[in-house]
Every structure is written in C-alpha cells, then in structure tokens.
Length: 410
Image (cartoon, rainbow, N blue to C red):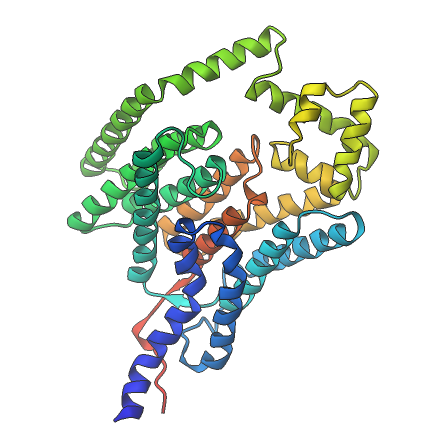
C-alpha cells in the first residue's frame, strides 16, 4: 500500500520541487531582503531532485522545446560575459544570475505543465507583488520599490501584467475566473503606477491599448468589441485616476524636459543624456570587447580631460541607464551583438512556435517591454529581473500536459 501511495503522489511532489525556484522567485523572494541571493542554491537543489526523480517527470521527450534555440544563444552570451569578466572584470552577480538561469532552462525547458498550474503561478505572483506594494505604501508612502529599487521592481510588475493581460484577452473563458484575473490586472496596474517608473509605465500603457486591438483582429464580432470596450474603459479610467494621483511625477518630468532644453543637465533626464553622451568616447576606445569593470577608470580620465562634468563624475553611476549602450561600453560590440541576438532568439521562440495564441502574445510582449525599458535603464543587469523574466518565459513556453503523458511507476 505504501508503494501505491508513493507511486501516485511522487510525480506531483517531484514536479513541484523542480518548480521550487519559480515559485520562490514569483512570490517569496520579494518579501525577503536580498532574496535573490538564495535563488542559485534553490536551483541547484531542484536540479538534483530532477536528476534523482526524472522518471516521475512529464517532459517533451519526443519533441523539441520552443526555447531550444534561445537557450543555445543564452549559453553563448553567458560564455562571453564570463570571458569579459576574466579579462576585464565585471559584475559577478550578473554573471552568476545568467549562469544560474541558463543551467535551469537547460534541464527544465522541456517540462510539461497543466494550464491550471501556469495560471495559478501567475495569479499567486500577482497577489504576492500587489500585497507587498500596498503594504509598503501604507507603511512608508511615496515611491514604492519593494526590497530593491523601484525601476527593476516596476519591470517585473510590467512583465507579469502583460502575461496575465494576454491570458484574460485571448484565452480565459470562465466569467468568474476572468473577473478575478481582471481585478489582479487592475491591482498590478495600480502597483506599477505607485512605482512611478516612466520607462516601464509608458510601454505598458501602450500595450493596454494595443493588445485589445490585436484581440479584435483575431476575434471579430459584437461580443469581442464589447469586451474590448469594457476592458479599456476600466483600465483607462483607472489609469487616468492614478495619473492625477501621480501628478507631481508628471510635473517633475515636464520640468526636467524644460530644464534640459534650457541647458540644465543636472536633472534625472539630464544625467541620462550626459551618461549616453559619455558612452560614445568609451566605445571608441575599446569597441570590440569593451572596458569591463575598467569603464570607471575611463570615465575618470574623461573627467580629467574636461569632457565629463564634475556633477556626472561625482554621480558615480553604476551603469549608463541604457542596456544597449551599457553592454557596448562594458562588453564591446561582440557582447552587444550576442545580447541583441538573445533578445531576438526569445522573440523567435514565441513568434514562430506552435503554442496557443495567448502565450505567444505574452512572450513576445514581455521581450518587447524588456527591450523598450532597456532604452532608459538596464533591466537585464538586475539579478531579480533576470530570474523573474527568464523563469516567466520558461513557464509560458512549457507545453501543456496531456492525460496520456502521465508516467506510471511500476
């Protein structure tokens, strides 16, 4: 009888243990100070469990994964980042996170998941993040960012919003579940507004309008138009109300733009412009492999030569507030090329895959959001964003479980 009990529950138990890193990154990590540093240990344990209990897992043994090409390019990027780290120095936390993600995807990308698990993980993450946002706002007020700075936190909320939003638009059929999911989507939008992160908020609001239009093209008819109209009215009304609440941030943005136009580059926008301008001579000095961690010495030299303002020099930026420029400066043209190839491989994994529409839309939207937000920040330099976005894409790409896939232990 004990053997029968073990045979029945072992597949479910092993699968949850293998998914433990995903569950942790989606939920608990954000409530623990420096919670991202525990992810590599959890990944190693989960992979050991996968190796020991592989016969219980439901995998795409006879099929390739949509992420196969993406994982290959990701390993190429990891190898190149490691090379730059050895030669020029760099961020160990970034390298460790990329290596951990590539290792996990290498062995878990062919796992099969029931849709109920996939949606359950998205909803659990939405609840964990929004409760954290509101609890912090009630305690401290002001700009909300969790245990990390507001920009990467906003990026994570944005990619989760797009995934759940795509599911509600293109797949969710049960009215009760759609209502619950819509409340979570609205809560995520409110949370994103409370981070006051313009580089993420603007592309997300564009997606709020663009995805229903895409839905209308895919699902023509009176009912679809009513659904689109109702959803847009709710979201845009909420967005307008929150814009009023965040009016100070809007006024600040206008003032910063006016200051830049009058020659004052001391504002947030002005500092970014100076950083982007300072990247150009650094790229020219080491165009192929970049400066690595030596970019600080190169900036100091620019300061001594009078080509870098004292204000920007003392600002001591850890990055250039643009992922593409930052990668080019630190990793050279080779690194930038592989980084862009990684993003394109991720888009191709979902654009050309034979998966259901909502997961294709969600995957492509997430990569596009990361690419757009990379124009004003470095989302994929932040360890929590690397883990969250990577694990979310793996969950979206996981094939759906069929009843015939269940393996029975003799």
